[in-house]
Image (cartoon, rainbow, N blue to C red; front, side, top):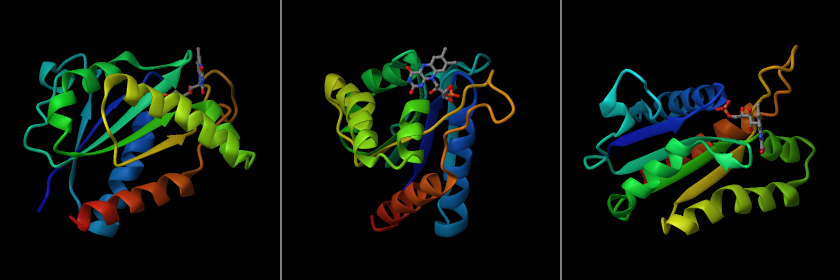
Amino acid sequence: MSKTILVYATRWGATTETAREIIKVLKEKFGIDVDLVNLKDKNNETNRNPDISSYDNVILGVSYAKFNWAKEGMNFLKKNKEKLKNKKLFVFISSARCGGAWQSRNYEKHEELQKKFIDRKLEKVGVQFTSRRGFGGYYINQPPDKAETRDWNMIRAWAEEIGEIINSG
Ligand SMILES: Cc1cc2nc3c(=O)[nH]c(=O)nc-3n(C[C@H](O)[C@H](O)[C@H](O)COP(=O)(O)O)c2cc1C
């Protein structure tokens, strides 16, 4: 049985909720247990610098705002660049703009933003991924729906894609 960890860096919480949904699908549909680690955990130094040596699969979730990743996500990649070479890496971001493009069915724009907001970041560090997805997020100060742009079906579908890959070895 391979081992899976999901590490994440959020600013306002969307990434945490998305991470929990992915974990739920992996457990319920595929029987995969996932260790969840908050890279911004103020009370736990081990969580801020997780040792991923024993894991086969790494899922990284990052908040995208102010035209950039939450810095802890990038630091994680830089620190673990060598170790990640032998693992399957899955990356998602929470980006209101990505979610907005998807919601308005502008799939071309969505792909363009995924390339810009995810692929280029990984290329810069020199890390390869198995799969990646640009999900939506929300603007916490915009009630009543916080300008939510996430599509939960899209999130669940990606979790299923990951589950298939992990279970196929
Ligand atoms: C100050 C601020 C700046 C933002 N800048 C961007 C941006 O540049 N691009 C984008 O797609 N979304 C942007 N967003 C929306 C975020 O993607 C959204 O809040 C998302 O939920 C962030 O993930 P988190 O909730 O896990 O922190 C911004 C939100 C705020 C509050």
